[in-house]
Amino acid sequence: MSVDPALILHQWLSPAFPVGAFSYSHGFETAIADGAIDDATTAQDWIDTALTHGAGQSDAILLAAAYRAEPDDLPALIALARALSPSAERLAETDRMGAAFAATIRALHGHDLPDAPYSVALGRAARLSELPLDLTVTLFLQAFVANLVSAAIRLVPLGQTEGQGITLALAPQIASVATEAAPGDIDQIGSAAFALDLASMQHETLPTRLFQS
Image 1 (cartoon, rainbow, N blue to C red):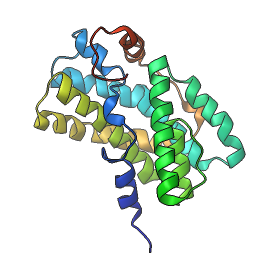
Image 2: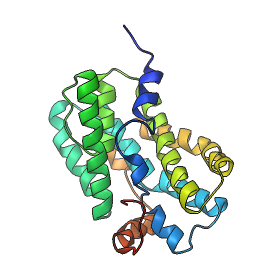
Image 3: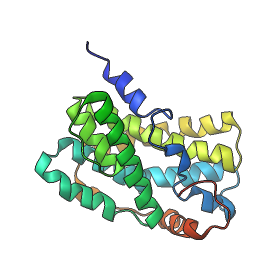
Image 4: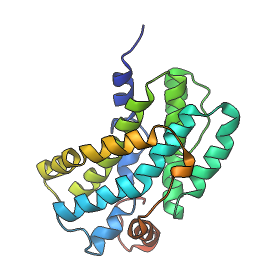
């Protein structure tokens, strides 16, 4: 029985899929504690930066590269994805989410999927399931934004409607980043989100923490 690719991807990228995404804030918690984020406008600016100049863009390219890669190329891609993590917590985040994702996909679909950083594991799983790359990258980025919005709703705090407004407002950026990432050219990876990277490092010593990153 064939299943609509969109339904498979919505399941994989749903908050209910057991990768633990809800427990990671990507350094967002530090910025809120420091007062850099205190309303919907500052939250949207932070998430926009993460999407277009930070891990959103980098991980989307890594996903596409993993989708297009031959099996022998995966170890180098895994090493690159891990090396791009700017802090110990961010490395743990991508490794743990990737391992949890891979384990669930192996159980559900029977794919020979190695444990890998989350974006690489997702790209490889989409290739093995013959899912469309463009839709995979786009929905991955939407899920990336939605997870940060969820953190903002809980921590700033924001109302649910304000949070959904941020996700909707960033839809054009999601589409643009997805299109640019689709070729999977790792030479185009480049981060200019220094405040986000510093926040992820400082989170390791934050006195009170609700999130793991």
